Picture 1 (cartoon, rainbow, N blue to C red):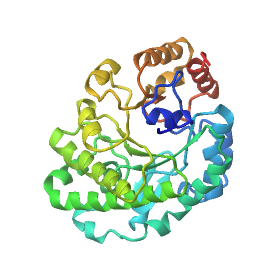
Picture 2 (cartoon, rainbow, N blue to C red):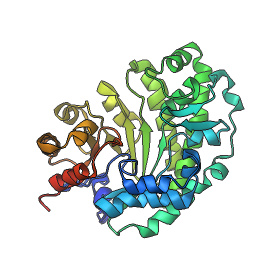
Picture 3 (cartoon, rainbow, N blue to C red):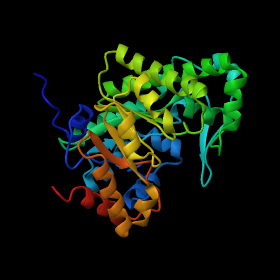
Picture 4 (cartoon, helix red, strand yellow):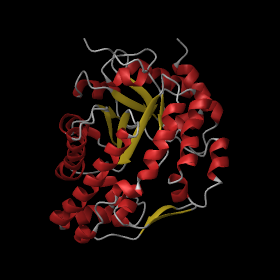
Length: 345
């Protein structure tokens, strides 16, 4: 008989219901913590920060020491894959990531075969973190999904509506899909490396999946995600995979059915009653508190926590935000959140 995993997060991902549910927060290692800002000051720039295992491991562990979250997510960035593919990435203070805009027609020029070499420091971060975690804390690795990574590559940075990327996807589907395949293959290799370095769960962030018509969603979200999952499984990696197609709306069920992910992370806009009616009964879900109510705190934070706990009662559920924690969130509000979730413990 198969034993139920003892770590709360792994138990839920195996289909068990836990009360209270396990909890962690996207971007839980970040600027809202004074100790993070102190360590961040030791690196010359953000990319160097991500590629320095000692610093990245330290900030990965900080929220675990302070709050006792049920999972630690390795500190890195979704835009390390373009670097491994030979593209230049840099961060501008107050503006975010910048890249040299990429033409999908040039996808055959993307460098292959350097993922293991370029991203080796991320594996070292995981190896440093793993032995320092409490016995009941799960270690999560992650990557950006191909569509989201592609939007940054084509646009040259963040974009309000990813318009140039969408035009490129429609204009030259052969080249665009070829670019996505290169990104997907590199991402699968990266995730396999993370699992071999100690990651117990893998997460795929498709942060810009919103606003896509179904034919394009199938091409640029579902198809490359399935490609990644298939390659990870073919390599003998059986750890759970959480998919997060943020903003997928009514296409969440297709994503859940067709990509092969173990669990589905939901964004803030998803109505729990609708999701429960259309998602497979045994599919673990993660989410999906509004980050702005965490910033607001007070009675409304308690009320929203209670609403989500009640909405997902009796189902495998991981409590999280519907997107990442923002730098302006007071630490006391995170403490309030955790106290409300765990008040029955």
